[in-house]
Image 1 (cartoon, rainbow over the protein chains, first blue to last red):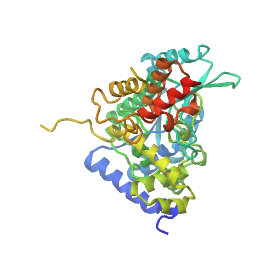
Image 2 (image 1 turned 180 degrees about the vertical axis):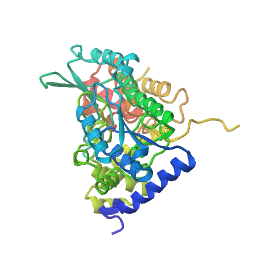
Image 3 (image 1 turned 30 degrees about the horizontal axis):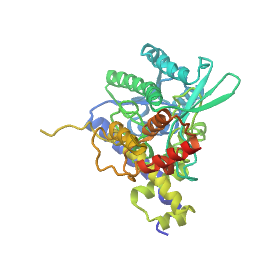
Image 4 (image 1 turned 90 degrees about the vertical axis):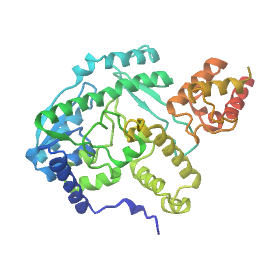
Length: 322
Length: 81
């Protein structure tokens, strides 16, 4: 079979060695910096990048930054610290709530949410999702907001384009403030900022411009999320992080990457993204994954639409040549 | 102004920025990258406000909203109800 399910299997030992050489060469020889800063989110990508930096540069040259805010899942900080302790790296914890408040991020966003649900206040949590039936029927993507009161009672509504843009601009400030903090710590130590974006996220534009996309180096941007998991197991990332469902962790009400953006679980998403990238014939994809041609076409349309909407994330700002 | 002309003008003004780029009645917005997910929400709101109809979540599908002719048929169907 030309397109086996194992198509994304890698040799983790070889990959760790290859990436470590890359990080070492870039940090010391090209950037001429003494080490690396990594924002530890408590998730799999940052844990893997931190482990790789430790192997590449030595644990004493790696700084883990923990940057929670009042809406972060507390477990993120706990797991980030546990992972840092396991690696034996230095950490700094900086709560960015005050920075975000001073920019009016929470206040401006909450005004928008109150316009949708008048009862919304500080005791509520909320998140944003896309429709989840991507394989089942033709549909267009639209954003819905779910709020949850202190008794766990939820309400969900579709939001308008203008409300989504306002909420999104506020939420993206979280990653952008983190970027500022990372560069502050990196520059004063003469370190690079190591990015944590994987290939799945790069291809579909699942990161914030000048936020988590604002880094010096992207050590895992050539690896699909499924492959990042393979590295995580090889590198000994703590089990709590490996078994945690991936989440943007920027909404007060927990939401997974699948619910918020991809609409497919990573297992299927990555194999289909590979097939999409490599133009694997539909019958081969169908045979391997047991999907109808119609379902594959539906997913590919969604890939194309997200790819097109986020093209500018993957480019330098356009400019005239002369 | 007819429904198709109104929708056409809205699409050109808001998503093609005054350049009609050979926008035909059956041009797929999705296939041609004319409208993204934010645009869909704007389009739905425009339809609701202009024609006084409610668009249900399960009606936000290409069959209803992915071209000028699909939207026109969808609005006509809703107005008949």
